Amino acid sequence: MPEVDCEVWYVRAATVPEELVALLDERELLRRGRLRGAGDRRRFLAAWALARLVLAERWGCAPSDVAFDRTCRYCGGDHGKPKLVDPVESEVDVSISHTGDLAVLAVTSRGAVGVDVEDASARESVGPHLESSLSEFELRDFRARGGGYADFVVRWTRKEAILKAVGKGLAVHPAHVEVTGSRTSPRVLALPAVLGRPDSFSLIDAPLPAPYRAAVAIVGRAATLRVRDGADLIGAVADRGDHAPSA
Image (cartoon, rainbow, N blue to C red; front, top):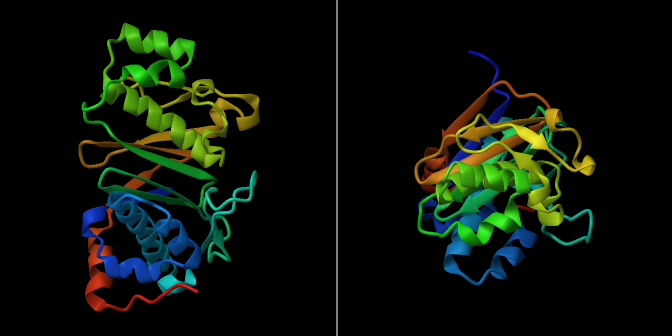
């Protein structure tokens, strides 16, 4: 078996029982409590429970031994790129994304990683997103190909994955990040100098259950990507009832 450079885990938020809230630490509980929508709270729980369980299984430790720091390096808020506190693997990096009923986690030891997932169903008009998200080149290419919302989502997830990998989020305007579209293999075409060189990123589409589309960006070269369903992992822990609050 070839070495897997990056794992992408996903789980349906509806399958994560509320009692797994015991896996969240105090800061995460506060952040979840600030979310107004029940769906937002379910997705938040699914994402962070999945992250702790995946890493606990990977390292052979208790979920409560896995700790994250989300301090933003720009403003000090609690919304920054998640960093592992005292990780077993010094080079491991993670990224989390969630939308609709799906939560997604990317884990790698190859370099900084970013993952983004979106619902690609055609319920939403693409019009309001185009000029605010695409460069002039991308906009011309998109219109020439007669793209719809699903095509836009492919390009958007690729952009967001790059920005999340470098911890910039939307601090850099997405129109300044140029990537290939849905009918072309994922590749970075142009970046602001502050983000580095386009060829320093590996950009990979992650196959997920429809209608979700996801992309992973890694600062460095990645040869293989494994996508895994976290339902059994979540279910096994919920059945055992051995989860405990994080410190």
